Length: 280
Image 1 (cartoon, rainbow, N blue to C red):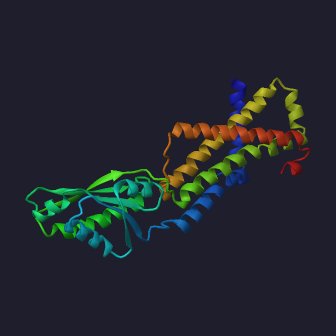
Image 2: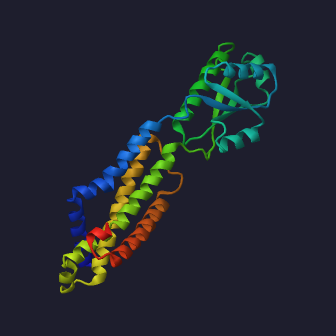
Image 3: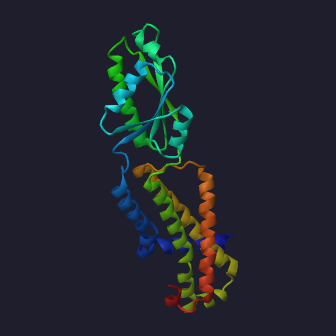
């Protein structure tokens, strides 16, 4: 095992000294993420489509809806609570506002009956959009509360995970898959080059076993794939709000399985390719 780890460390040092390999492994996918992420950042958030569930049915609730309707860039889609939440899950509306029964009574009492709340459903994975919804609701309720004692209407925030992902949430995993594929399949090229230069034949004359040679290469590629995944996903989370909804450990497992699968394809290519050019 000592020989395996020593050879793996030597392979990693050799890889990190290759500037071209580092560029295609790390810089190339990040360039695409930043380029397309900046182009499409904020797309689709210029207006708000709010689901509206009026469970009160009083003139006060109607006035509240008119206040939202009067805002520029805000579209109201009325329906019942269940239908509105289903529409939000499908990405048809950005958020849902529920006016509960008793709203009109509380507002009409001028705060004497105590504060009342409307319920606002937002998606926590779309932080920018959720912030816009909260600001819009706060602006409208601020006007409503001027009519009574402070405050008679508040907003209760509820979360609902939707299936509506932004562009970058699809693009980052795509670039991650492409990068892992590249790390695995391109493992064939140095292997063919070493065979063409008779380096493998010289290594066969040493006490080094074949499984150690192959194992060190596999370990190096797996480590590169994991580091690559952390960098790509980290950039997506830090700069563009990509959110991992599943466990990180499961993500690491799938990255490792993908890297091993593409490494196997790389070795298949290496077994058939006679020259480095044909491997490319």
